[in-house]
Length: 278
Ligand code: C2E
Ligand code: CA
Ligand code: CA
Ligand code: CA
Image 1 (cartoon, rainbow, N blue to C red):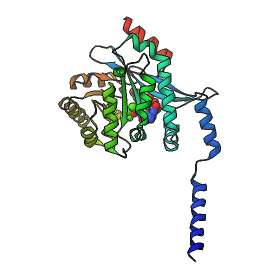
Image 2: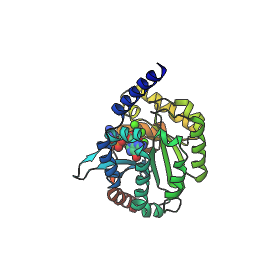
Image 3: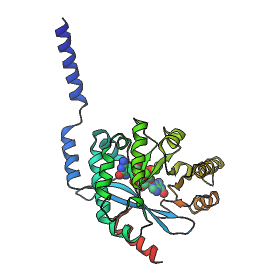
Image 4: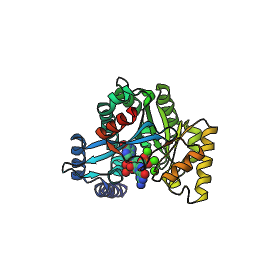
């Protein structure tokens, strides 16, 4: 009786596995797209709104399919993350940044390059090796690299995450907490992870100037960042009046469609050269 119950359980388990496993044909296609380097970096400028100078950029992944259509991360990132393909994709993305903007970054040592990581990257030592392997001997210095960790997804092992972040910082890499105020970690992440920079989510920036409570929230984020010795970046800036409010509140770094959308490498380089010549 025990044996047949065991078999029954085994068959149920196999049934569940078959119905839940990722569609392998679709997965083969996805892997082929990775091999063909269809996942490419776009670069969104980050501006210093006090001086009008370029501070650097955030790297945002795009899927450029063979037929030329562009797919945004919302449509493939969840799949890339659950299957673990994101690890290889991120390595390839980082390598492409070296090829594309390495020269620009060696000419402009104060430019920063921000890379998005997902929660799983902070649960695996491999990311340290990747950063060393890719940027260690590249024209882009560790001091120019920022990694962004989003507050939207929970980190599995805070202790390990804290250790990996400390190792990145020992190299000279800085760590930003993304989407602050929208997710899980909140104050606990700020305190425990040793974050260098906080990024104010677009949600709060959107309402700046039209809604007093968001002004109060941004104001307290600035104060918090100041008191903790952290930098601050506003994201999703679309209107000039938001820039004015941000300046009044003491925020000096911002990105958003008002300045520029995420750009292909060549356009980002042209823009950077035009701005630094001006
Ligand atoms: P995020 O890190 O919060 O990136 C900001 C998103 O806001 C980007 O969307 C950007 O294109 C968009 N954005 C920037 N300025 C404006 C603006 O003024 N108005 C509006 N409406 N949107 C603006 P995107 O490129 O579609 O990326 C979406 C999310 O996908 C990112 O959110 C990030 O969480 C994730 N992602 C993108 N690239 C990568 C990557 O290489 N690795 C990982 N792990 N995640 C990535
Ligand atoms: Ca980000
Ligand atoms: Ca963000
Ligand atoms: Ca956001």
